[in-house]
Image 1: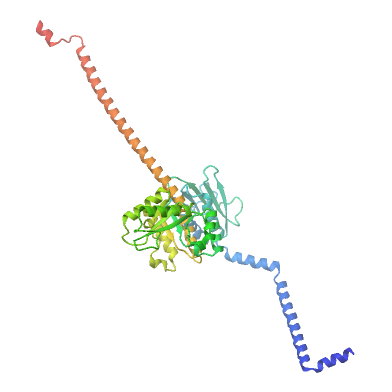
Image 2 (image 1 turned 45 degrees about the vertical axis):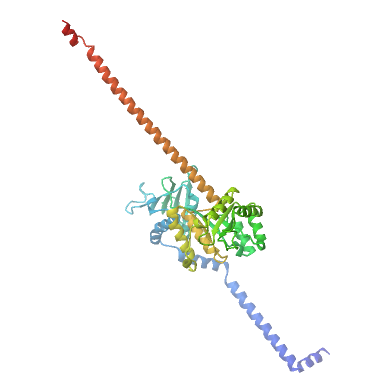
Length: 441
């Protein structure tokens, strides 16, 4: 019965074709499985380890290569922190001195490095260690708990215990050295163009920026995130001429209207204490600008005039693929002159990584980035410190001047007293007679 059904099944050409194709597929699957299993078995742990060891051995540098690369490579790492060649002293080991000699500290060199007090030795050590490891070398670090100065001894991985290190780096803090630096405040003015996820990532991880606060009702969620996250926010208010009704203030408004507008602003945004004031037209009357400034100041609102901002990129540079490198160079150039920079930037979410990489590069050189509130606080503190310094110098000069005058008076008194004593001494000598006495006789 079963056999007859099987024979009947194979009488159909269609059934025979399906059966043949099925056998071919099964055979292919078995062959592929066998091939994969053979490859996995042949790639045993011992063989993998041998391959890895061979690769490491191929990448390992010779002593001659290390002697060429190590010192300039470390100097390059130090330069990335804004350290100059004057702060790096290298003593090459004399090859003629025997290893057993007490004069020989290392096989290659000893470096003495001075770093400013605003740079931690931990940061420097981390980058030096990364470079040393890339050469296949190891290091040992000793730190002075009090001064935080460190000594780094560099050795080869196969160096015997008790052997001399390849090199030694002494890193010492000093208040006699200071890096080229500036206070930088960056205000991001297009955060409302980012997606909710991008905004969350930016607000959670970055605190050194200020943000232009969006005033559109559609951005209510972003407004809440900025305020609840206690981010430093600035509102952009605008002033225009008489016919410009799109601005927050215009020249047709009198003092009363301006005051009313400022009151409404403080009610709508009670937590905002800084305003970026932009002039949207030419030849706006000074009276209007002064009135707006006065009313905002009366409500304890800090004003940042748009005209005071530093331009970091020209129109042509903004379109360049290398714009963030240009931005970093411009910050360094302008920072040397001004020592403080406040600027707004429009950076897309796609460009933000490239933008922030340059911020990190500048931070490593010693440039200080902070939001606008911190910037103003630091500036006020610096100005106060400078003023106190000037007053102390003035007091010191007055004190020195008075001291000189007193010394001069005392000198005159001493001279007069000396003359008087000499005169009295002469008159009182025995045998000395006055001329008048001689005449009497």
